[in-house]
Image (cartoon, rainbow over all chains, first blue to last red; front, top):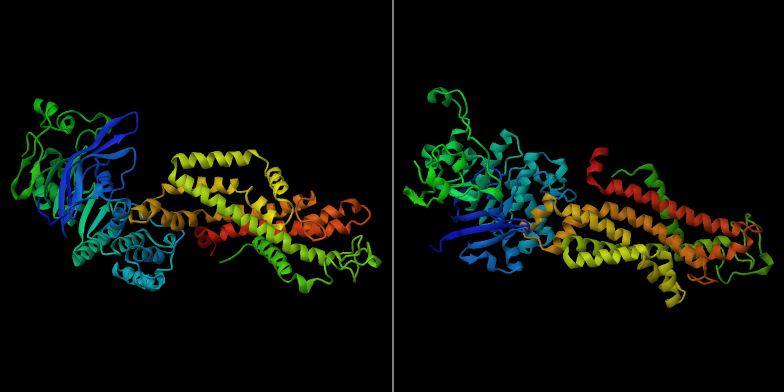
Length: 326
Length: 273
């Protein structure tokens, strides 16, 4: 591996151990994100994408823990850092925005103060300077009349405005990596598009790398250059987002692409219904043996039920883990 | 900011008590201790003696005015000490959990199991009467409710998105406690605090009444009540006016506490405007 990678996850395994059960929630997950790059992790609820993100910022809490593998930020292992060093990374070099802008802001503190806090905390600014910078930060995320808005409390803002404030907080210290965990799920569709556009532009301007986590393949493909598809704690396919859309190699990826509603494509494909993937994601405690997708897969054969598929390298740095990939 | 009527009345009562305490030397007619004159003993309230006089001929009005200093000092300072102890213990216990939580919980239960007035009595008995021992005794014995509230609030706030978010943004434990947790629980803490302040004024009165608080001849409302006990039928003004002072101050604090809670919660603030 070259030193150029901003963050590098290698063979990560996250265990869930609550006394009664001891299972691997995430297993064999590897990916790397270079400076300024955009990478997406896609998968259904419970596939392990959010806890992978938590592991990245060193915030896994019991009953979850990193059991094997390594996470390196600029070549340094995150697990090896002291608590203070990890804190200095969080919010400063690695920032994160969340699914719920409704609850991720402190309800009793004006939003300007919450932005300013980042400058005070990580950049050692005085409150006077920090408050000035907070107004600028709000202006950067296209909030109208920022000098008045800084005094508002979160409940006085709409969902879209709150998410803009969250983005302003996350980007306040010019982080190298922004983790966006379902950043638009709680928003209206029209607002979603604005927020995504904003996020993409801001990060492109500053050269901030994005790790976007979502169940929405369309959204991720729109923002990210490369996409990793996760299923039941493993990455089953990782490729450029164009390739994934055009010709997904893993049956699960194909299922995801097929289940996206596409305007005007129905007639062209000669069908009138959206196709869904049969069955549901297995619970962590009873992941099937072999390929974990086998109970839901149309192409499954005997080998799928017994043997975990090896990594097959595709062109242009892509990979797939399937015995019968396209 | 818009205060409710009851909060305004409460605030005014409390402000009046503070004002009287601060300006006691100017408001009093005579010296509360040295102004004895047996010629004027046991005068009922009149234009000259507003609240009447006691058996030594001291002006009750002047003594009530000076008593405000002692009663309010005890009420405010001891409750502040209680709040600081209670919030610190409750917040850290719930935030860190583990053995520290068990320890604080045990200590709180222990404090709740001992009647606080009896505990304060015991401390006073060891330290001896006087203002400082009163502050210590009352400041160390009434934090358990505050602690419980702080702990319960922290437990529920800890899982809130913004507390998690703060951790992700690199806030340290202390900063999370001060900027995220404390402001979100301050409403109930202030309500408990003002109620407790009223309680402390009453506790001072009780201890002084029992002869362990402020000793005569210095006037505190409680010690005045204690001295007036024997003359309650012959000279009721001796107990009525200190009693009224206690009643109005405690009432004011309680009304104020309720009113402040509404104002300190920004969501209810915007609902009203």
